[in-house]
Length: 399
Image (cartoon, helix red, strand yellow):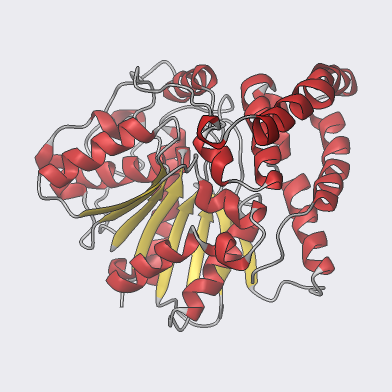
């Protein structure tokens, strides 16, 4: 299922769903305070900088992202950049929550003629994990399953916010020739509600659940974007060394599970805290906030530099060889994103040690653009530009 691109009207409707949830979960006075804080940016800084850079600055002096972005893409990313740097995470997490994202998706589906979802999906919850199953035919066993962990800096995001993206991904998997594709989207606990190892424990439990459903590990592709991709790398390293930090995990993961067939990572946050992280003129991430979320995620028990939490710090070649899926790892990232130097370093390390890794660096690209472009780009080709290489990579490796 691929709906039309997000429009300015959609943005207004999204705000209409968002406002009452902010009042409920954040409080009326804090909501008003945050809105008042945003007004100078929305009324003065945003229009001035948008018009100045797009129409009064020479092409070569524009940021790499602005050079290739449409006005709508540029405008939305400027707002996201401001929000990521200035809006408190307890407010930001409401933007991506189920009570906002799910009715917004249902309204978008209704606008495109779908009273009910044309693709089956249902919620799953047990004592150890929760998430969303999306599957073409729920009565049949999947012939490919993507186990997905969403991004959001460990502090925001939900499987429901990513549902439209994942429904589109499932449709493309079906179009590529899979008989019954499925996706399980993990909905893990955010910080500061819990810190490591809770999120890894939930990823282990979610993967075990997927493995018991699919039964063939070679037909499982583990995937995620940003912090979710970090969790996936941590999961792979855990599967190869189950004894590390086991005493902190209440025996979760004490049993050995089969490795998945492959991994597909979108803009992975490979090293949680690094001096190579620098804000860029194109990307919307803010280094200061990222490092604060990273330390919240690590908590008091484990160093933020621990290789199980920051896989980019793992230089143990035998550990990586045991962790690598049989069909390898595919990494997609943007050349202009904050994480690009650390991602490139990890890819170089893995390639230099004869580990199977393929990558695609998007010139002028920003963080998690394969996800964002599905919503923001206007043409069908541009909207699918990020997903199609992921689908092709899976199709080439899992037959």
